[in-house]
Image 1: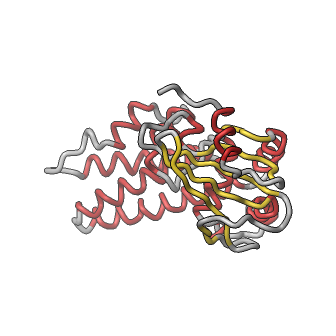
Image 2: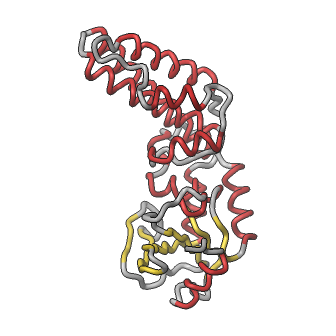
Length: 262
């Protein structure tokens, strides 16, 4: 099947009357926008509206904003499931306010700053496929870059990695090597997410794309080959897991010292 162009996607949305007059921007997000999609992937679209009212749609998704929900409409077209999610411009403002430098310097706990849905909505601004009004997107991206979003995500991932490192060390000392192995894997995932967050490759709530994000970021701290060897536990010896656990925790601690939080 021939790959769809942005104009093709825009035509489908218009034909279904899914772009209200209040539309400020519309853009494809997720794997489709990044070229990571496959035959089973959904096509996800965000539509940003002016005003204070969201359109009537099939589903409401709760978010801790005002209004406390976004609307979504799903349908099937061209052999794929599509989901169109409607956000208000004011809701984007609210999310950006949650990750302002003022909020960061006030000591807002990183993991409490945003829900995973809010974090994903902001993260997707940087890697999306515009369909309507790139102007709005450019301004939103600049506001995101100027915010403390990167610092919030890095601190959150580093904190989760540190907690898992401590768990792994305690479990290994007590001889619980099964649990220590799992904690070490958890720590490694969070450490890599911190590294990628620091490079602007956001998306840690969805680890399924971590390898692709790593390739896109190409960090100098660790090669893809070394990362993938640890991610897939290639050197793990179930009869003596301590060396593997120790190596993983060492890498985690090395990453933590190299990633800048602000």
